[in-house]
Image 1: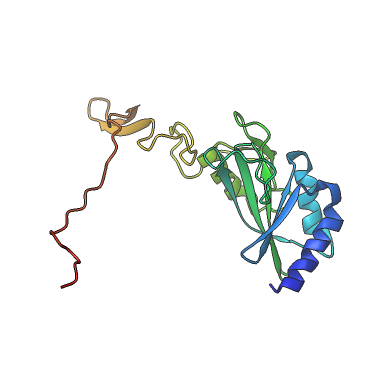
Image 2: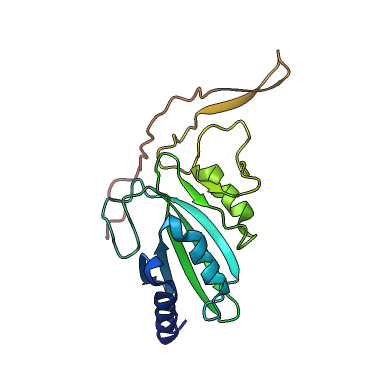
Amino acid sequence: MTSSRLETLAFCLENVLADKLVSMSEQLGELTISVRPSDLLAVMGTLRDHRDLGFELLIDLCGVDYSAYGTESGSENGRTDKRFAVVYHLLSVSHNHRVRLKVFAGDDEFPVLDSAIDIWPAANWFEREAFDLYGIVFTGHPDLRRILTDYGFIGNPFRKDFPLSGNVEMRYDPDQQRVIYQPVSIEPRQIIPRVIREEHYGDSE
C-alpha cells in the first residue's frame, strides 16, 4: 500500500472511530490500531460495515503475552501495563487494504474479551486457540474449549510463565490398562551449549 493510500486510511479511521481509537501506528506498511475492551464490539462492527472501511474478512487473530515485554505505558504501538492482548488481522477486499486491531484484556488474572463470532464467524477456531494457549476467555463464544492441547492438559502453554517441561505427563499404565496423567518426572535443568573447535581454527595463514 502506497503512503498516500495509508494516510487516507489512517485519516478515515481517525474520523470514523473518533474517541474509540486509543492509538494508531504504522509498521511494515500496515496500520495497527488499539481500542479499549469496552469498545471492541462497536469498533469491529464499524470496521466491517462502514462503507469507507469495509473490513469484511478476519484473516487471523492471535493472543499475546506481554509479561516480559516491558513496562512503558502509552507507547506508539498501543502497549499498556496490561499483560494479555488479542490482535485481529483484517482485510478489506473491496478497498484492498489491511489493518491490525489490538485490544488488551482488562484483568491479568482472568483475561476476558468479547467474542467476534457474530461479526466474523471465522473467529471461532482462532478464539478457541487463544483460549487454549493463553487462557483468554471470549464472552459469547458458543463452544469455547481446548482445540490443540488434550482435554486433561493443565495450564496454557504459550504463557511466558508456563514451565518448559509442562505440569503433567501421560503414560500407559499396564495395571489399569489405560493412559493416565501424573506429575512431570523430568527434573528441570539448564542446558549450556559447548562449542569445541580446533586450536587456531579460522586463523589466516
